[in-house]
Length: 391
Image (cartoon, rainbow, N blue to C red; front, side, top):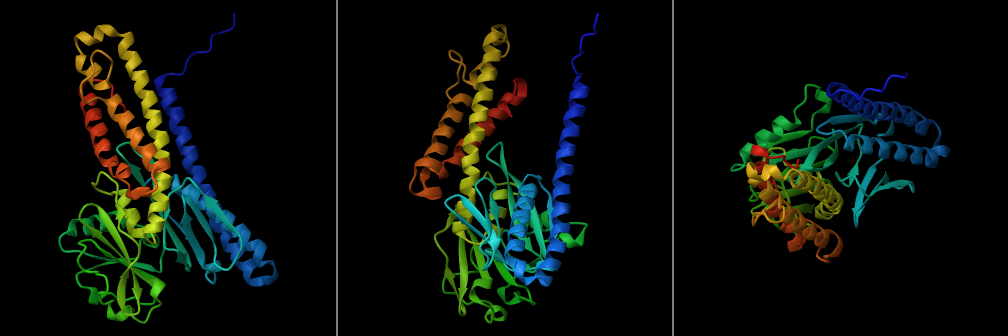
């Protein structure tokens, strides 16, 4: 008689899953490494065959688009792309109505993306791109936010009150591989800002008091083109205001943006505001994240139903674990504040913010995300003590 196929053990399943993860991560790095090689040789071809520029530009844009996708799913990782063969070209990044477009300036080819939130300067001209991703959680993980910059885009962080974030930024951006380090400097006075031949600079005012509308631009950057000198200031109430140089003064660029997050270390939404070109690009890409939030929250609503079914089918547990029934929102046991009610209300706010509100991310529905995320997080922590947590 044929032997029955045995079910895999927990160890085997775990080992298999680990192997799949390793294969996925390795594949991502293979794609990135291959893209780097292709870009190098593409650069040589571009220099040697001007007649083929259009086709080459299309190939480069497609490859780069794949690289950004790969880097975006590699959590908490940094990658570099050597673009010395393409240094004469200017990469462009735009985002409108939840659709990002990447291309080469003055070339017709481009690629579009509706899922990966990507934050970067609008234009980059460099010999090396730097890519970095951080997970965005509200409170569970939603998506990895991708930051794209370059070795010749310099960031100046200035703070007195929020010096802790400067120290955190230092640790977060540090790397044993010096070619992967973000180009930045901590300053205590705007007079210390020196472009030193960089393609563009961004001043990050963490206290919200140094860069002001119609205030003077640092003397050493006054000769730079206006679009090459920008700033973002962080204001009370989790707001970020963007500025751009106009002659020798700063002018506001758009309205303040909402930094919708739970705070804490390596706050992905705050880091995204540092790397985004302006408020329009920031909001456009955060809209992608919130569209994904709608789907992820629905997944957790489904998981909660499974959890409720488990407790309902094992009614004897209600004698010893009544709080689990109350926290899960099971009828007849539900606490006033329970996971079902919070997830359902959260979903309603998400739908209103993302798909119905004409105000965009400035609507009160979007601002309410933080309150519901805190509530879900608190209930989940209570579930962890003696029940089955949701995540």
